[in-house]
Image 1 (cartoon, rainbow, N blue to C red):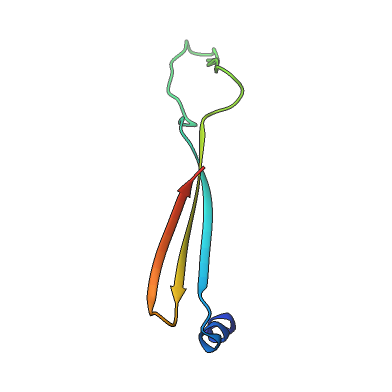
Image 2 (tube, rainbow, N blue to C red; image 1 turned 60 degrees about the horizontal axis):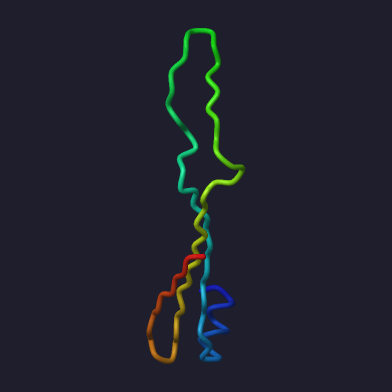
Length: 74
């Protein structure tokens, strides 16, 4: 067992593991066609793409022997 887990168990502390991620709502790869030898140019409206940021956490309580999950979108 890792030292942090041992100390948390001994103290009766709750451990929290969190992570965050971002997702683009538009695909990065697009299909198109062009004449051979001509590079296609795809115009894009605006400079930014729609993005969703997500955060999630798991909490482990040694006293209650319970695992809980939390999440949110920004």
